Length: 539
Image (spheres, rainbow, N blue to C red):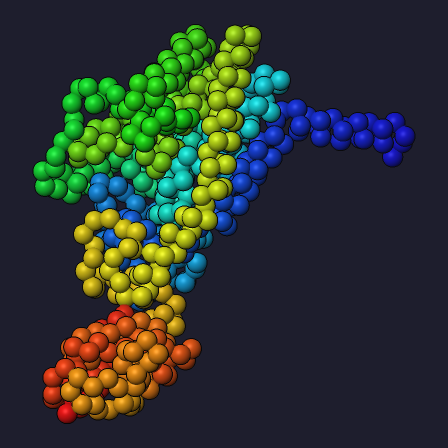
């Protein structure tokens, strides 16, 4: 190699590296990796391997997974109108292979990072270089905001992260088809939209948007036929799933024109900040109106070059369609939840879409608006992350206490909602989520070896303690925790030694104020199993 060639090769390498930096690929990777790391740090502080809320409803799936049987009907069965095929398939694998329940929470962080990478990677080369670092950071922070804290600590909410990822992948493919007119991008868009649809309910909006947009911009009849066929299949699937949802009994409704109109600004205010818990106060509504007005202006300002802004339009459309569906479903069910953390991922897509539209326009006013959105996102993220960082240990303590309650045989304080408190459900859940030692304690038969003293005279204190109370001791087995001593049909709390071989209790005077044989036994409060009985004689 000559010196000139070597110099040329070095220059090309340097040019390639510079280009890689200039077009924003490195920014996209760094911002996505950064948000993934920040979410993982939160999960380390707050995540607990216990089921929560709707995860209790999937006990039949867990039972089949424990047995190694694939229950197709259960996997495809709708849950309150949601299509959870991907989620249920994943949870089946988690239970069958005995993975830590938190793996789904960490996987959620990964999908959020991938979504940030996808949107940033597509957008960076297409926006003003001076805005790239700000936009890349804002996209990552918006997608990974702890304002969706309810999602972060629920294993099943990985479905929301997967849905948003595949929705954004579908929108990306539609945008690429608009630019290149290559059918493979249209096929990719349909496939990703379908995966979004079978992830969770919000994917339905993505699928409809993708099919509608492709039908509008399709260049060949062949592609139009494929789109119509996909739409027909989609309608059949939706009809079968919605039938079960519509069969639910009548519920109290909040569906009025006024509530519907308030729901929209309250929903989108939640993407950045809500001033009250309900989100229907004047400040939240005004803030939400300003966000909607900004998105409308972004669309209007870029419409003359609409072919260049397909991704931004689809993100905004997805946010609006999601709000429409959620508002109708929640209000019809009598539930007011415009700023529920679980709906944050759907609301924030509108903000990201507006940001991408403003950042791509080459004028100062739109650049300033893009920077304003960046500032709002950064402030919102900083505030919510700081708050969540402080409260994460408390969340862990709450979930851990729920886990202890579940594995202690209790049927209250288990962090679930709804009517899933039957013994058969909880037995399956304990079999899945409790350790072998916890299950052994739940199922163990307490053994009563002997008691002392064995008799006293009517009204006469026995084994009297310094405080004057009468004490009874018993030697036992399998009574390390959660045992009581039953004396004459009255359960008495006990103190046990470290191995559970000796327990003691104070016996109230009224229990030996009458003559006769008093039946004594040990009861395991977790399993409700009882030991053999012995007699304490009162002469």
